Structure formats: C-alpha cells, structure tokens
Image 1 (spheres, rainbow, N blue to C red):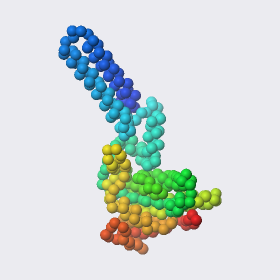
Image 2 (image 1 turned 30 degrees about the vertical axis):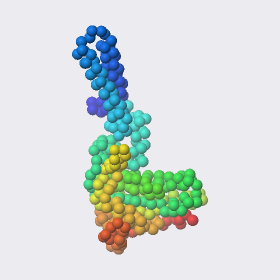
Image 3 (image 1 turned 45 degrees about the horizontal axis):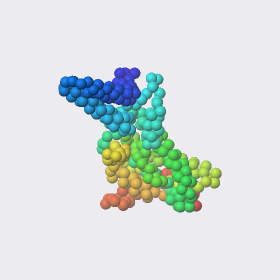
Image 4 (image 1 turned 90 degrees about the vertical axis):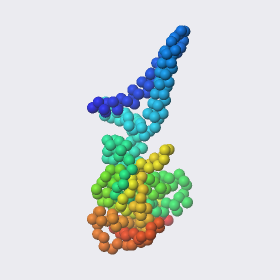
Length: 307
C-alpha cells in the first residue's frame, strides 16, 4: 500500500482521538497557567489562544470531517488485507441501489470529480409498470409495495447488468441513464439492449407469477439519446446525481406513447445503435413545438394484463 492510501486508511481512526487529545491538553495547560498566581499576562494570553484554537480544531473536526456522509467517503476505512469495513459495506449498499459494481469501482478511483455536472450525449431509458395504479386501488398498501418492489428489483438488476445508472424512481416507474457518470461510447446500444432484456425479464416474472396465481403487471419502455447536463444537482441540503435536458423530457414522452410490451426508441438512439431508420413514426409530444421521430422495436409477447 502506497503512503497516500495508508494515510487515507488511517485518517478516520487517528483523526478523532488526536483532535480531542489536543483539545484536552490545551484545556489542562490553560487551567494550570491561570491557576498559578503571578503569571505573566503574556503567558495567560498564550494559554487562552491555545485553548481557543484547540476548541476550533475539535469543532471543525466534528462538524466538517466526521458528520457529513459525503466527506466520509473521502476517508474510506480499509483493513490491511484490503477487505471492507462495516461502514464501507453500508456505503456500497446505498450506492448499489443506483450504480452497478463496475461504476462504483470507478467512482472510488475518480472520487467526487466523476459526479461534477458536465454536458454530454447520453441515452435515457424510462420503464413504466402498467396496471399498478388499478392494482393498488383494490389491494392493501402493504401487498402493493411488496409487488412493486418485486418488479422494480428485477428492472434495476437488468439495468446494472448493462452498467446503467438508476437516476430515480417515480412510483411504478424507473429512469435509467447510460453514458453517465461513466462515458460509454455505446450508450445507445446498451440502453436498447437493456430495454429488451427488461421486457424479457418482466415476461418471465409474469409467467412465474401467473403460475402461482399472483397478479401481473405490464411494461412500457421509452429510449432517447441526446445531449444533457449530467452530474450532482440540488441544493445545500439535498444533492442527487441526475440528468437535465430536452433529451430526458422526450424520453419520457415517447415512453408514454408505448403500449404494453412496447419499446419506443427515438431517432438519435436508432442512429447511434446502427438500427434501421425505415418506418419511423412522427408524433407531436407535450411540451415541444417540433415533432419527434421514433420507432417501435420488436419485443416478446407480453402476458395478459392484470384483471
């Protein structure tokens, strides 16, 4: 292990006791100096300054270094054999909800710079579970959550297989990014392959649920590619990695045009993935003055919707 890694590994263990030890020593020194009669005023002033500096250092250490989770990531605790500590596993569990294992590894190596907002061409995928709203109306909330989680877990697993980044969950819908935070020249191909695999997985899941006489949900997917600003966005109290731009809005709109089992892909995504551009549909979507060209690509047959 090089000296920088060794220092980073030891920092979380050494910093807290060191700060509090310095503060305690300064306090004892100040008390001793003030308690002795006839001390020179300069000695008393020096002791007072030392105490104040120690308190300031301790306060800074607690509020800035120890408290925020984002800064804790800068001091990853590792054992000598390279295995993860309990804190590492908790952080990885949180990141794993949104990033694939490969992306997490790169984020560890690149640090916070990998999440800075940048303008980049990416592909955006929206996958929506059909029938959940009607299902939740006639089902207990607890059962609805279990069913929804079952489906979303599978969609996220497929997204991570293709190294997609889960941007957000919106009820029964998931938004996935390709080409961010890691640059992926084949982001459109990954997004389309992910969409196809999602339909296959949901079809298999529905077959199994039907066999067990459980309700099933459908799936509609929209994929679009174009330039976006991607990176950490938000305010002082909440920051989220996300994508912002017209590309995202169009991806959502064309997903809304899909029928159960459909994958609707925007023209730019088709170009990047070297897929045929014949038979393009042209639609006006909400919020845009210009029409959008898209194409429906083949998907496996979907089971009947929940009734």
